[in-house]
Image 1 (tube, rainbow, N blue to C red):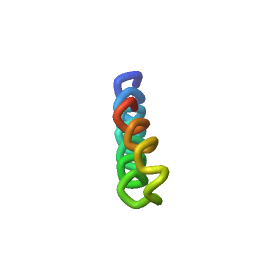
Image 2 (tube, one colour):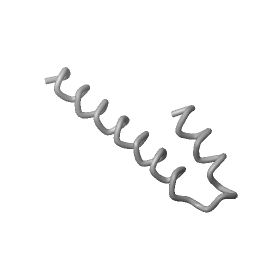
Image 3 (cartoon, one colour):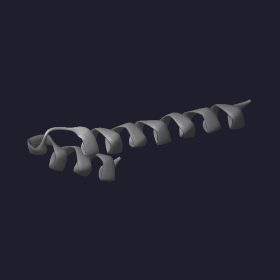
Length: 42
């Protein structure tokens, strides 16, 4: 059971990183740099 929960958590983390990357690509110019840094750190 724990292994399944780990897989779900990993999928959520990966999805959050993808959202940060998408935001960095589509956000206003003045916020792109910060969003890219956040995505990289994540």
